[in-house]
Image 1 (tube, one colour):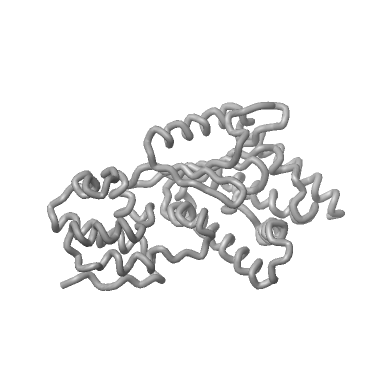
Image 2 (cartoon, helix red, strand yellow):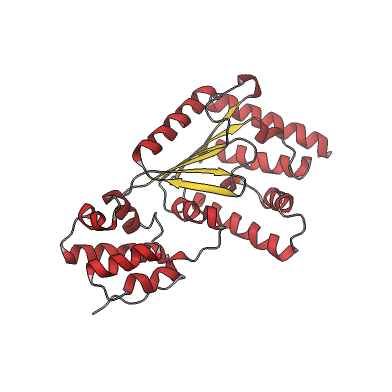
Length: 278
């Protein structure tokens, strides 16, 4: 009996990956053996099976040929590719939701997982000053929905390194900043996240060029996501990921310890509250 079509509302990439694992096992192939005729690594096949990688149509069509699955994977590619996020970020956002560990460097703005509604709205409005309000509303809703993964008290581990500019750039005004940074301070005090701040006085450091996110998984290789203005690239090559891990290690070495970082954040909160007249 052929596998039943995927329901786009219930983690279609994870379901597609599970079906791939069943079909590969049925064919008696290892991940590396399936990857060889596709000109991809065994770890890439593992990422498809774990749902941390998106399956593209050309790969899906070749998988159908190799595993004789009657076009199942090609037919369901469209469902698995649907995303509420921009194309450059969709793969990273979907992988983020399955990660057991997230390490993130943010040079200028608060990472999306930690943004408050008012802060996110100010950011999106700055990006798209002429967008209709419903468009901004949808962007804010999707961003806040990502933060639901922090509802679990222990997983994923979220460790962020901020540039001091994250605290000093007055996004949305003093009241918005006070609320946003107080939210982060609360998560730190509740031992839900780890945050370190690289002060301006540190000068040059290992990631002057942009943001970085490292995603670790229980049963799949680590991914690195590097983002610029309206662009982003997800890396799975072990040597590239290792190099980005070294960058992150250097950032944590340059940053203030967590306790001093929290004190700096709390000081910024008090300053913004005074400026807002609170």
